[in-house]
Image (cartoon, rainbow, N blue to C red; front, side, top):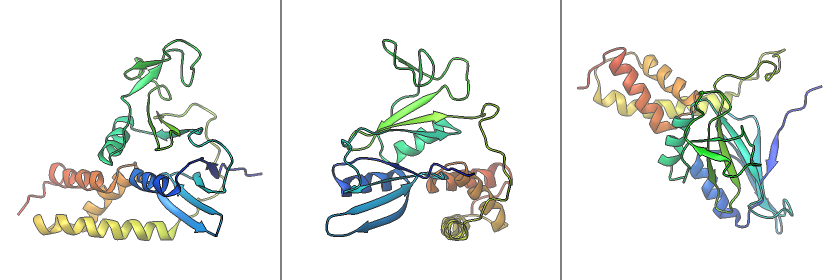
Length: 220
């Protein structure tokens, strides 16, 4: 039997304000449906299989009471991306008594986990209602923490088409200012950066760097 966490409901007080925030955050807008007394908005974090839903008439929970965790493979890059989007993100920290343990006085200690362990380094931010998000760096998962894959994952053709279109637009800027090159080399570097969580601007910088430092394509 398959049971996948699909949606987490986030209570908010101002739907349009929350929508603007999560758009700024870089989450994908999936739905925005409304009737006279009801509105539901669904967003999905980059590369996530679980989504969040908020709106009017969705939940009776107090706005700002949600606490959520986003797993990232590069905490510094994730912070830089969010800061670049105008999000107020905390400095990196670790927990004095171990991940998520708030039972001790002053549970958060500034800086990365001294031992550099996967799961142990964090940053945090809040949405306009005070719903709390943690960024948890997971570079290597512990044994038994991943389900065995029994069949090929379904390819989202629409998502690939959208990313190809975005890549073509970003590559156009590079193509105008650099010597002749294989477009697929730039595309591959851009795709790789986007799949690893970089935003469009960061991915373009990464692709430019790859072309310059690895393939030595000069500007014109």
